[in-house]
Image 1 (spheres, rainbow, N blue to C red):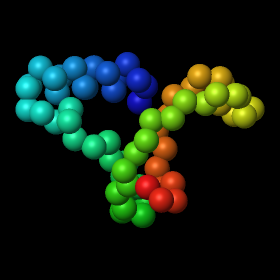
Image 2 (cartoon, rainbow, N blue to C red):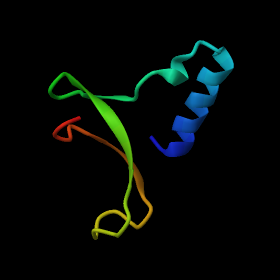
Image 3 (cartoon, rainbow, N blue to C red):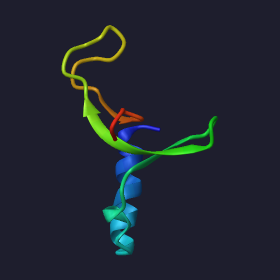
Length: 64
């Protein structure tokens, strides 16, 4: 999945006008069968794996 696919899906939700865009973002750990609230994160400095500015969803941060 890429962000263009996510955007297109979100646009479809917006067209349906069913208020699902107001839902909290949730990530499902398919292996563990657990759900977590998600945060949108942006890499500030490359860590050698992801480039500067790479956007990702994070979950399971202590205190979330």
